[in-house]
View 1: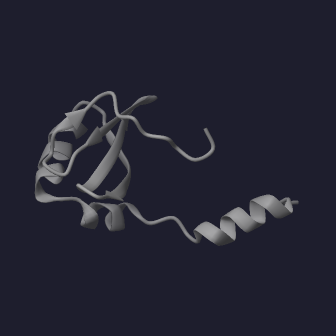
View 2: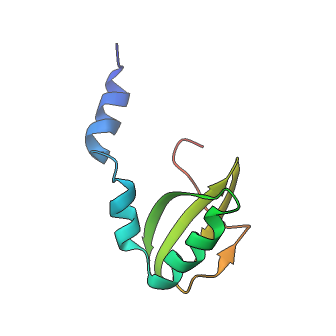
Length: 84
């Protein structure tokens, strides 16, 4: 049985966006960079809307990275994930 806190968290966040919804938020530069990085095993986790434009958070195995709005790869992003 789900505890009340988990139920409230689930309701507050709603359903998780799909890959396509995240993809649609990305800039053309991010999409081109991500396309090349997929060959190295990177996967798209999510996209955050930031003041300087969308930030695509990607991962390779357990290592996080990010693509800035202009498509630059940041292998040491200062990202705080929920639940960590």
